[in-house]
Each structure stands twice: as structure tokens, then as C-alpha cells.
Amino acid sequence: MSNRAEMAATHEKYYAAIGRGDAAGIAACYTEKAMVMYPNKDFITGRSAIQKFYRGLLDMGNVKAIKFETVELEEHGDTAYEVGKWTMFGPEGKTVDAGKYVTIWKREGGQWKYHIDIANSSLPRR
Image 1 (tube, rainbow, N blue to C red):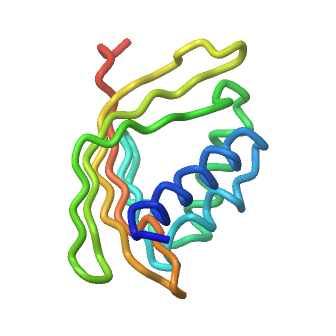
Image 2: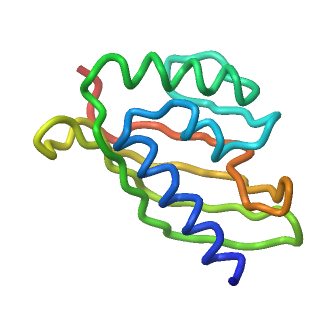
């Protein structure tokens, strides 16, 4: 399997975990020392903190799915970067947020995982 196919498979695991409401499954898509940088949040560092963050997000009940659209992906050995757009869906498939992201990927344990995840909304502030 190519690196890009492996990365696409990680996205699919992430999508499936979101759909199941599985914070541990989402966190498993990240490296052990990953960092997440989302709007209005401090750095979320480490897989366990990422799992806790997603548990809180999923418990609110308004996130049921997410999809990524890759705009650029470039590999550099055991790291890669991806730039793209994301759309978050709530109950009944309604778009609840959308924006852009930069992800730095890293191979860990022979698998491509999210290592640095930076995202922000493109929707106007409410």
C-alpha cells in the first residue's frame, strides 16, 4: 500500500470513530506525543489529552461526522504535511462547521498517524 493510501486509511479510521462516538478510536489516529491546536483552546498535547478532548466534543451530541478534502499533500521520509478543508456534520447530516487545516503526519509503529493537527473555522464568528 502506498503512503498516500495508508494516510487515506487513517482518515477513514478517524471518520468511522467519529461516527461511532469513539473518542479512543479517534485518539488512536494520533501519535503518542501529538499536538492538537484548535480555535479557542490551549495546546492539547498527548494521545490521552486528545482522547479526553474528543470525549467532551462527542458528548455534546452535535458532531456526528467529518470529512476532509486534501488540497496539498507532500511526503518527506517518515513525515508528511497535508493542507486541506474540513466539514463537520451534526444530526441529520446538517453542516455545523467548516474550515481549513494543516496536519503534519508522522510514522509511528509502522503506521501513518496525525502528529500536529491545526484547524480553524472558515465560518463567521457567532
